Length: 286
Image (cartoon, rainbow, N blue to C red; front, side):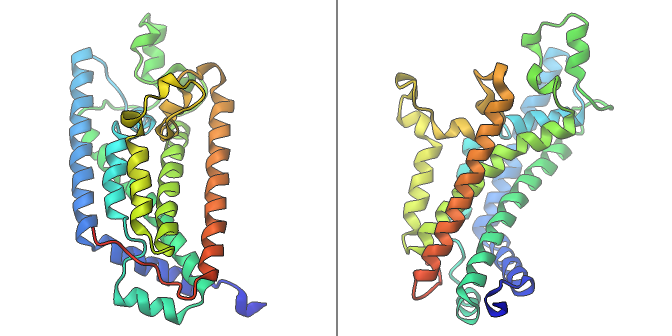
């Protein structure tokens, strides 16, 4: 029984090693630079809009706005992230050595931990850089400044943060809640690519999510009311759109859906990995 347990130390060491190899990859470095530049441009546009509207916003609620909208361009951010994760794990000699020296369960679990590390690191990095660029545009203080403006007579339509968010959550709660769909969407994307890498078809996972990111441009979902574009579940603003009166149940349903999908993906990945004779994952060279 003990021999079949997944011990912490080798799993953590392998996950961190994978993450270190990924962060030093030239594609990852380029991805980070592109995301930082995009964040800078987005913050500049946000700040100029505030100046034009003569509205002052606090740091915490500004971060909530960025997370609500997926850093204002969830499709672009996801596409750049997708390019950097097209090979999971990287096909380097160290990874091949680890694959043969550890059990399939430990190896697969460590790669999945590495996937979680990548997603959280990119979201935290984007949030931190957005906060840094926001310093010149935000005013001191905390809380929902929109609430005060609305009480003073400003029309609700001009509020930056929607009423359903302001009336039910504090800014820090709103930020955590708004980060949830991005984390879920990116985890599903990363685990899908890992699954197809295990099957030695890395380009299939990349192609599927490239199509998902731009499905709204390819298909006219408005002509099929029953269907919704997958990107409708990528940010909190998109999830709640047209469901403001029942936002709580809508958010809960989507979060449960993400949890179920991720758990099922993990189960399938473990099942497929155990049946493979060689549990190393192939990679793409794009």
